[in-house]
Length: 134
Image (cartoon, rainbow, N blue to C red):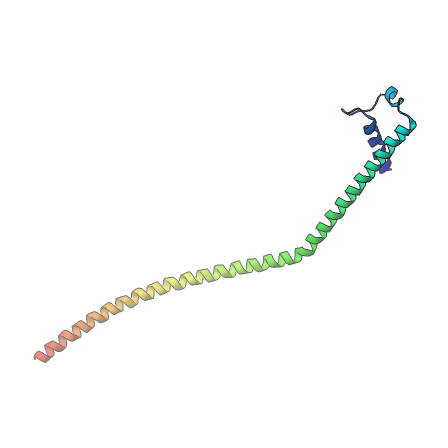
């Protein structure tokens, strides 16, 4: 029914003037039966081509939907893994920052101890020299 209605519309359009609309009855009556049948066949072929195009488009869309549905679990798994990796990276980044701060504090403490050791060595040297003089 849908194809017949579309064929009728296509026939009416093909009979119509270039600007659209239907051909007045007196103009349509000037067409021979062969011309009318030719126009009808053209309209039916146009409708059939449109139906085939629609079916092909629907088949392609269905294939795309199936492909997306087939890939969806893998995509969701990859997203879950990505989020886990981001969380692990954030945790490691926090730990690295804390370790670097601790390392800088240890280096500063070591430098202070080296300065204190040098001062102690200097004081020990002075006390030994004083002891030797006595």
